[in-house]
Length: 476
Image (spheres, one colour):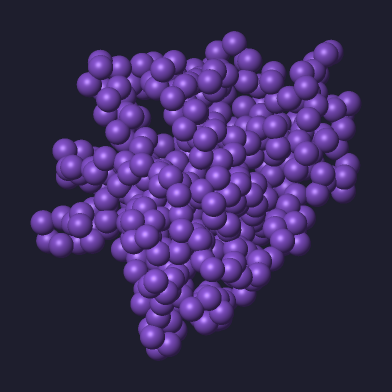
């Protein structure tokens, strides 16, 4: 009888699914034993409180799904090159495969792993799966990256996107499974404190739940998506950003569902497809122009006089949802209770912080990094820089959202604000009261507090922002 062939280590990251997982499918097709592994390395340790907690839930769900295939998810802690080399030596694995990462830190980590394992005679392979299109395969006529979204959309909208792959029915097991950490010992939710109990009911975790979420969206809401996605008080969006972030559903699966809906005449399907491509656009830019993630993408904005005191009283009020501007405060509280914020609201609160208050977009970006259940490094950075005016294809700085006008247009009956603001209501809803259960006790907030006066007069804040913009243009 032939000896058992050497196993393949499947290094799992933001691809917590069985279906349409190219690396997993390719490993299963070999018939060799497959050992899935998740590493708690610096990339995990550096995550904000809410993303790290939510990742832990996703890892647990993925581990359960692997058990149905006769497999296990091995958990190890430590730098990826060393941890994977040690595991390969323990198991006799001759190959380590993964889904390619495109963010700068992820790409550097992948290269370091490939070098370290290659020096030990272990073969490595990076598979596609995180994006619709590989960044190197989408370039302008001059060979550079697209810097404006609309030409990017036109360049890719008619390209072939391979059909999603089926999940394997079984994975060959190794002769013996290596030791694994316990997920509970990683304490992924420690930084959430009491907030985890509040946010948990709002999370939709795992591949099965993600696929059901997509099915419901296509069946019930995609037709009205183009208009409904902007209305703050209704459930008009897909909410798939949470699951795409952790790879609990593939973007190809979402794309093909959108294409079928468009073929069947759903009016909002193309807008949905454009949002999926916007996600690719963000990752392509982060890959090819890494400064998007932590510096002004447009370098001529480096001298703009944004305020950079992250501990300023106005910033504290913004974080706490106590700016005195109801739609801004409702949005900030929605995020603290659910780990999610409506996309229209994200633009409103970002414009308020960077323009009415004149604080640097990086301060807002960092708070979102800590609080969002659907945190994605490229999408979050592009969103903040787009609103602030410093990014690619950005809204002009002088486009300053008036929060009151935005509320009148996108929350005309005030239902969104009432859902999240307890102060002043005789019988506040549970959603609004939950905010006070989630926030740190050190904030000393109570639903019985009076609603605060505005941190800044909106007209004066707008005029100050425009004056700063004109002075900056004049200095250039």
